[in-house]
Image 1 (cartoon, helix red, strand yellow):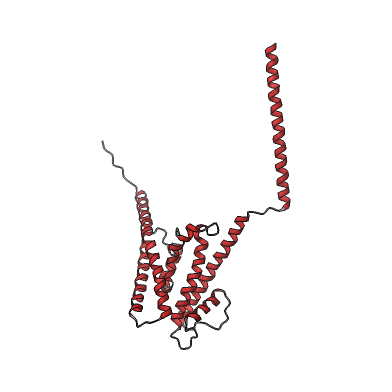
Image 2 (tube, one colour; image 1 turned 180 degrees about the horizontal axis):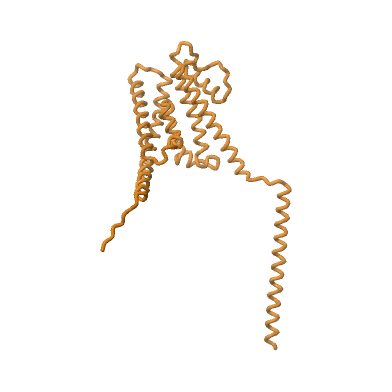
Length: 271
């Protein structure tokens, strides 16, 4: 007589989730390097567009369409992974970098951090200070944010009549003032787009610089090791000496007991 094994709904649901997680991992492994590499290409095209700024030229138009196409790919990729993910409530928080590249298209170049750090060049070649790629990601992130932010503000401000950020050099100078929190006030964005980009850069830059400082401090403490107070160190040394003396006394007692056993055995044999 044959029996049918009926799977419970919870078992089937777990199996379905496991398949989705496996498929999502395979998808991310296959697409992440491609999208990150395209982000590096976009860094070059966006830089050329911002510095040279020849909107009437054919190459400028093609580069603009490439930026739109790349942003569309990032949107599709983020939404597709959101549909496959289980923890949808915290999905955008856990994937904050990808979310930023979609919400703020000018920062889509930050997607290149994946190919540079996570299982990439910096993470593989880094030493103890760069272990895991966290600090390397923060350092490269600060550089990219500064570079892209300067170019984005330049694009937003160059056509405004009352703006004083008109050249690439002025944009870079303003960026250094902003990231280092000097803020001389000689250059400042006046447009809504420029100020919005500036606020985003300030928040991201401060966060990433905080990661660098905290990671550096943790690395230095890890290399030096915990420092015990003099009193505790002395007590530990005395305890070690006491343990050593006790071990010596136990060894002497064991030898004496063993010799006594041999002597007793010889005496019993003679009797």
